[in-house]
Length: 608
Image (cartoon, rainbow, N blue to C red):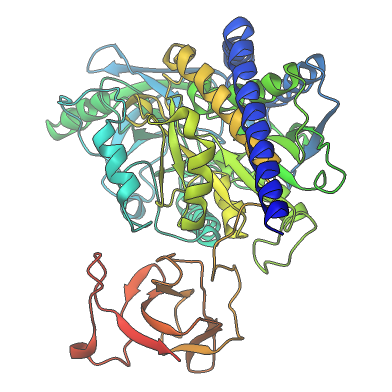
C-alpha cells in the first residue's frame, strides 16, 4: 500500500511538472509572437483613426464592427458573428458646426456639439443668457426666443492644475489596495455605491425628469444650449452624463442644438454678463440621426474548447467598441478592444487549444447604459430584473473586462470574492510583482452586469495615466495617448490569463451569499421593520464580505426580510437602505458594536 502511495505521489509530481512546463511554453510563445508580430497598434489605428468616433447606432460604429469581424476571420478565427442588441436604439453624428462670439468682439469659442440634439436652421446669431439652474428658465417665459442659454448647474471654474496630468500607480498605493480588507473602500479606480439595477433606473429617471425642460426650450424657440466643460486648458468633455443627457432611443425627444464649451470661455461669457454686457454668439449645427437597427450589433468571436466535457464552458474577454464622439475613441475604448483582439490573435497564432471555449465580446452601447452587454446578459445569462437564469449562467467561469483607459494592467479587482485571490495570484505569478489583487469593487462598465448574476467578473486595474485628468470622454481621446508598450504587455497578460482559466479543472468559485434575488430559505432570519418607501434594502455583513448589494431583502407588509443558511458562529451585520448604511433599528444603541476594521453601528448575531 505504501509503495502504491509513493507511485501515485510521483505521478502527480510528474503531471504537475508537465503542466508547469506547458504553461511556461505557452507564455513564452505568446511573448515571442507579441515581440515579433504585434498587431495591437495597427488594430488601434483602424478602430480609432479610420472608424472613429464610434457612437452607438452610427455607420462609423457599424463599419468598425464589420472591420473587426473581417480582421478576426483573416487571423483564422472560425467563429465570428455580429449579434444584434437593438432595442430601439438610434445613432447620431455631427456633419458640421460653428460657434463664434461676435459681440462685444469676435472670438472663436472652443466647443463641440452634444449627442442626440437637434440641428439649427443654418447659421444663427443670438444673445447669451445665463441660467443658474434648469428650473430658473420658467421665470423667463416669453423672453427666450432666439436666445442662447448658458446652463450653470454644473459650472465650477477651473484654475491652474498643480498635479501631473499622467500618473503610474506607485508600488505603495498598489500594496495598500492589495491589503485593504473592505471591498467598498475606494483606494484606486472607480466605484459608484449603487446597485446595477439602480444604474439603469437613475439614468432613465434623469432623462424623464428633464424632458419638461427641453420641451419648454423648444416651445419658447430657444436657439441653443451651452454646457461648461469640467476639464481645464480648453479640453472639451462631451458626453451625456451631466446637464444634457443622451436621448438615444427611437421616439425619444430631440433637444434643441446643444454644445459643451471650454470652461474658460464659459467663464468669460458669464463675467461679461455680470459686467452688464450682452454677448452674442453665431452658432450652427448640422447633425444626422440614424434609425437603422442593423447598426446595433456586438462582435462575438471564439476559440472553441478542445475538451469534450469542458468545451461548453466559457471564459469571456471583453471591451466596449463604441465611444463618445468628440475624439476618435482611441483610449476609451479602442485601446481595450485592440488589446482583446490581440490577445485572441496571440492564442490563435500559437495554435492554443484551450479546454474551455475562450470567447471575445466587443460590446456596443456601453456608453448608453451597457446596451450591448445588457442584451447579451439578458438573452444568455440571466434577467436583469427577475434574475431568471439563462443557459450560460452556470457555464461561465469568468468574464474579464478592459475599460479603464490605455494604461498598463497592474492587477485585478476581485469584486469582494476572497476565494479567488490564491487562484488568480498563482496564475499571475509570471507578471509579479507588477500586478496585485484587491478585494475592492469596481463598476461603471460592462463586467458589472455579469457580477450582478454572481459570475466571477472583473475589471483590470490599470495605470491611470491621463485618463481621468484629460482624456475620458473628451476631444483629446486620440491615438497619441495610447502607449504601445502598455498595449502589448496587456495583450500578453490577457491571453495567458484567459488560457489559464480555460485550462483549470473547475470553474472559478463564485461569491457566497450573493444573489440578485432575496433568499427566503435558511436557518438565519434577518428582518427590519419599516422603510416601506425604500426601493431596495440589502444585508451587509462579515459573512458576505461587506458586499453592499449582494444579499437583498424581500419586501413584506411591514418591512423587509431574508433567510440564509449560515454555519454556526457569531456574525455582525447592518442594512443598506437605498444606498445608506443603516443600523438595525431594533438593536439598542448601547448594544451596537464595531468590528475593528472600520465598520461601526453593527448588530451581533449568533447562529447555533
